[in-house]
Image (tube, rainbow, N blue to C red; front, side, top):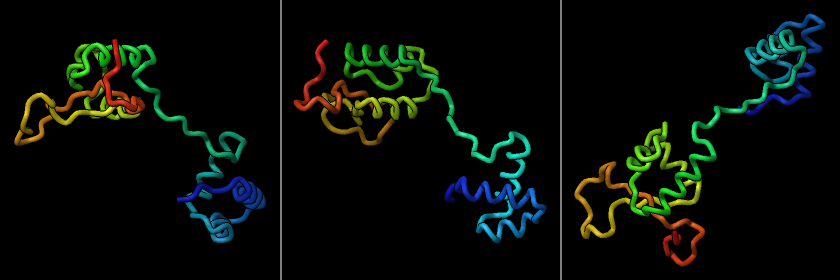
Length: 144
């Protein structure tokens, strides 16, 4: 669904102030009747027709924790997600840590490279953090 332009919002407010019905305004501006009511309530409450900015939820992982994560991976490139969470007392799940590490440029190992054949079933315990950053062109782990 496309956001409603400020121009349409302004026209909507003017029409409501003139006493026009929400149903007619919705048809005229080609928006839903519910949107007309929502924007009108917002205007009556705040005095503004501009949309309320969405800022999202604050991250539970601080910059200090991110630095600790980098240090832990640098010191043990084969550390698992579970071990990282436990070692650093991170208040997140493995899936959240995995997304965070990928956004920081790390790749994840599916299983331990030294174990030879792949395990018959993938398990959560086999996922390890690669000490190689995606920007490291030579494929070598970062030096400590």
